[in-house]
Image (cartoon, rainbow, N blue to C red; front, side, top):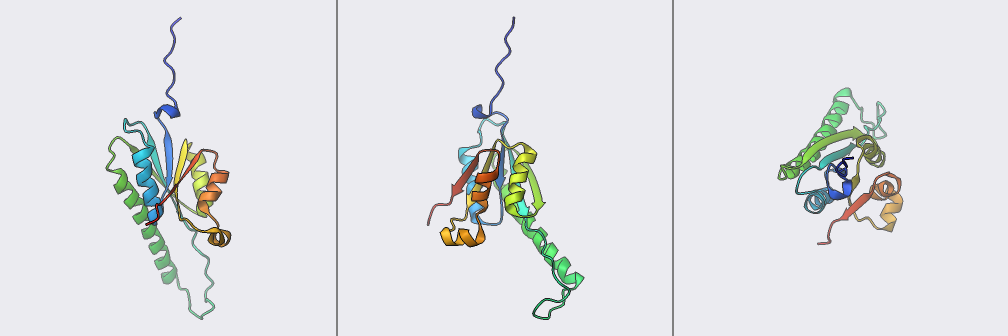
Length: 168
């Protein structure tokens, strides 16, 4: 009876799907470059999925509290700006990844709360690992603003690697 070769495993570095959360901040750039240097297999076979969460468009009343009228032109301008910010963040991440030709890169841009978008994306793409940066908020800031990385560490089904940016 012939024995089959053992299947490639994620531990061996073959065929892993690594999700990296990217935004316009330097923390996500640091996490991405750290991941490329320390996690991605130089032999190839890994797929990096760049996930960007666009905040949902806020709902504006026809007139805000200061008396400004929110016309469709203003709302369209706000939407164009949000689209440009998302595109810039993803393009910057793709340029960084371009230095690694052995790496397959996919992108996923979704609208919504970043905590939910990132966790849902890891499920959707079948992630073996989520890599994300940390803004390094203190206790008080986390209490008021919440922590995306903490939420993902608690709620994602895959392992989560939080890369802290060194203090300068």
